[in-house]
Every structure is written in C-alpha cells, then in structure tokens.
Length: 120
Image 1 (cartoon, rainbow, N blue to C red):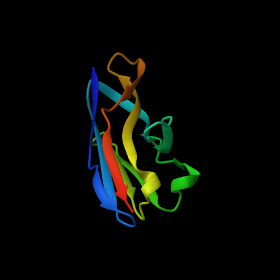
Image 2: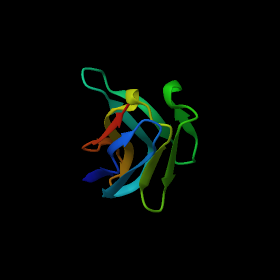
Image 3: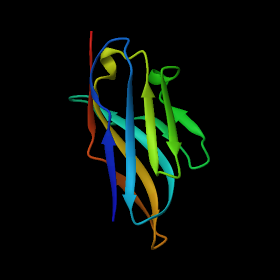
C-alpha cells in the first residue's frame, strides 16, 4: 500500500506565493510520473504540472512562468512552487503518482488534496 500526503495549501492574496509538498510512503520500488492536479468548485479536475523520474516537466498553459514543479527522488516527494498567484488559481490541489510497488506492478495513487485560496 502507498500513501500520498499533501501539505502547504492555504489562503494567500493575489500576487503571493505558496509551496505545496506531496510525500509518498509505503511499499515503493520506484515512482514514474508525479503530477499536480487542481479542481475548482463546479469544474473538472485539470492537470497543472507533471514531472518524470528523470526531471522532464510539463505545465498547463495557464501556469507557465508562474509555477515550478520539482521532486526529490530520495525522499519520494514532489513540490509545486506557485508564484504570482491569481484568484483563478483557487481550488483543491491533488497530488498524483504512478508508483511501481515492491510487487513490480505499477499503480495509480492520489493524495487527499490540499486547498489553495487566492483572494483578490
């Protein structure tokens, strides 16, 4: 079993910054892609940023130049540095990971989510 635990959400004024963290623990052999998604009220969950085990990154157009995803493979942790936040960045942020467990099978795991609220 694998758990993903997010932290770092909160309330911030527009133009401010937040840093989200997501730590994976459990029966982990390796972690392939680690991603951040977000979901605003009444909207579908959308991909914000992704990072491979080799460090290649991908971002939604709406966050390019403002958000930075990174990971510490030794700690099985992914981060999302969010700068120049806008009210439209408000939502629940979820961590997602494709994890190869000790059984050598790969499974998809989600964190419980952390709320980010940006006031205007």
